[in-house]
Picture (tube, rainbow, N blue to C red):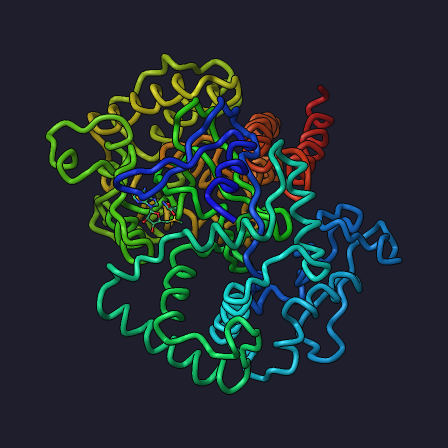
Amino acid sequence: MSATILTRHLHSHGLDLVTDTHKYRKVVALRPINKGSVVITSRPLCNPIIFPTHRAQHCETCFRTRGSDSSSSDSGTSVAAAGGAGSGELELERCSVCKKRYYCNRDCFTVAWKGWHKWVCQDKDMEDLDYEMLKMIVISIERLRNGAFKESKQSGVTTATAAAAASHGTGEQESLALTEYVFSTLMGHEAISDPAEITKYREIATKIREQLIVAKFPFKSESSRGEPPSVAELMRYLCRFHCNNFSIHDSQLFTMAEGTFPVGALFNHSCRPNAIVMYEGQTQVVRTLEDIAVGQEVCTSYVDNGVQRAERRQLLRGKYYFDCLCPRCGDEESSRAAEKTGFRILDDLIEGDQDGEDGKKVDGEWLTKQFDTIILPGARSLQVAGPSLQPPTMINRSSFTSYLIHSLVPLIQTGATEQEYTERLFEIYNSLRMTPHCTPKPFTTTVMTNATSFFNTSLEHQSWALASKIGTFILALYLMIYPRHHPLVGLHCFTLAKCLWNDVEGGMTSVRLSHEILKLSRNILTVSHGRTGQNGSLVKEVEAFMSVVETELGS
Ligand SMILES: C[S@@+](CC[C@H](N)C(=O)[O-])C[C@H]1O[C@@H](n2cnc3c(N)ncnc32)[C@H](O)[C@@H]1O
């Protein structure tokens, strides 16, 4: 396996890997890629680890969810193929020995058993998640050292998963040997990690070697002559796993597992990403959030784009050892420049004021009072408002909400180009900076965090009118901060539309607005989730709800 095979694989997906002085390598587009496209799919290096809290809900092999449509298999080993029902709700069965892992059928169980389950089934220490992660790493290292990454019957599900995933895109299928090769080329940063980190890794590596490998998991292959890896070798692996690991989330963006996807790990980070990482079963899918031109870098985001620059910087330095120079962050020199432009303005806007005018903390009680003043932007103004909307003379929570919603929502509904959209966004950033505002600023992340927990409380209490107001305010904040087709925005719109529809006090205005927000949700989720596979079922859910609302509107 060599660099040529990786190059060929990327080329078949319209991508290239080029060297970069700051980032080592970067993935660029070889041909124009439309927004909402699957750029590439990646297979896991070893079986991802489902968190204990989610274990009973997912098949450990294909990750399908209990209760989901059992006919929508992406693993190629459907219930029907295993002699099961073939349609209806997916059922899971526990391993009869350990009674801890769940599987949807015998094929999935057999694959897991041969691949890794037999190593962990009787291990009492597997109750501990950290221990389990280390054990998975040990299993992977054993295979990496012994060249066991060959297509085999044992890797049946991952092969089938990759085949299913390849049908999302047009490129060639990823072989296990390629997965292994790409992993060997990834950065581990062991040379620049700080001494405290190195000491921590040495301790973990020593513990793994003595307690896990020597005592329980002897390496058997002839090529390694049964010799366990040295502490130094283990440290190199640990560093590489650390920098290239992914949190796996479901279609609602709830984190449920951890895994290593070497090909997906080739994509660099941006705080204003043009692509997003999604999951279809155990397959990682990189999707574009906007149109990408030839030569442009394809970037995902390693951190939540909703946190302030200082926090992002800390997270990125702490785990990935770099300072971000993306269009939003810029470098130190440009940060000091007097006049910031474009995305560089955003972080100045979202930092700051913690307390209200009256000195009160921005807590739930304070927000309740404030939100009483937020007027639901009416459906009619969504129709008529356009890019010429002028900023208000004074920005408070109410005017901020209507200004943002009325300025940006029509551009998403009508599918304005990325350039038109970002130009409008920059005008908004400038006007938010220049226009006097109430204290605290309505658009800080502190306010957003509080508004989000307040929104969740009002959902729990089914206070639909209140939830609709806060949800509309949060939508305005999201539009200011996240890329317009970010899945978080689409998911929030779906929840907001349900609140609006349930808000009987709002009458038909609220129903009409619910319909507008549903259209928004559908447009965004079609890009971020697609219309096929497990994630695609969300768009169908939105459309089913839209037809209920349309019936009520009589359209
Ligand atoms: C998951 S890897 C990404 C692929 C990597 N560039 C490579 O060529 O193997 C993560 C590492 O890439 C580098 N990286 C990713 N995004 C970056 C960025 N925006 N600026 C600088 N370095 C970046 C960092 O060294 C980080 O630890």
